[in-house]
Length: 124
Image (cartoon, rainbow, N blue to C red; front, side):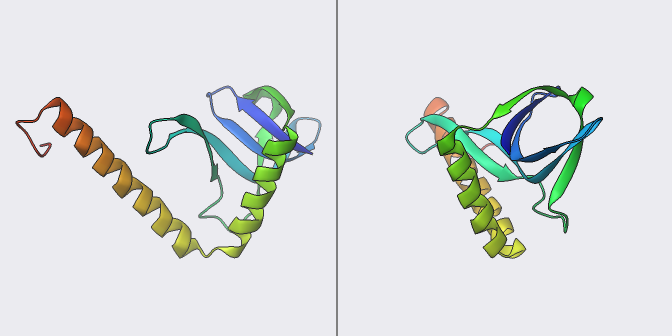
């Protein structure tokens, strides 16, 4: 069943969860992280937990889970599409996407700093 887990460290994970007595197994886990688009709207983004692993699952002790709940139909569909897309991508493509996102964030941050401190075009 596709569930969202809220962990004691504040992280949220979505995945196909199999329950066991002491822990649960999460197949194809994705972090749910806050994201800001170019217009400044805040939303959520899913990031694969196991991008650099050959495994497709993680195990989490029940003591590390604050609460969990079934994903909504729309979130479950979004998650399934991402899992299917992720399965098709090569690791290099994922790394390049992450680097591009970091570059874009850095440029947005630089523009913001230029607005705040127009006398300094670069940060030290």
